Image (cartoon, rainbow, N blue to C red; front, side, top):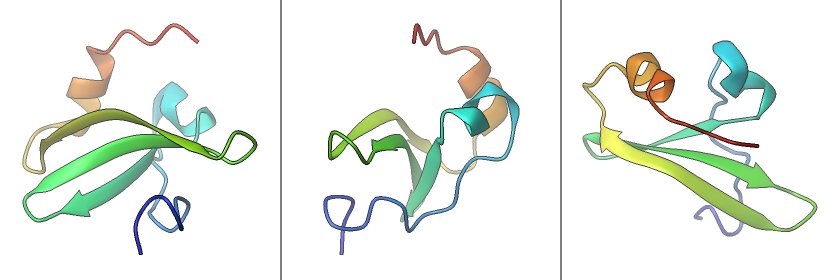
Amino acid sequence: MGLDSMPFRFREYEFGPWKSRELHIMPVDNFVVLYIPNKDKAIVTIIRVMFGGRDIEKQLKELRWNN
């Protein structure tokens, strides 16, 4: 089962403004996929794919998200 059928099955990111945006983290091998599911529109927005060993919080602080 992938994001198309079960986008809410992966854990939510717990910190900062991303928690209120319902950012989820999906592990894939040595990487993580950061995404925001939208139940009303039935879409998933991929924010970033990165190596799982990186500092996720630091990487998210560098993102500019105008929403």
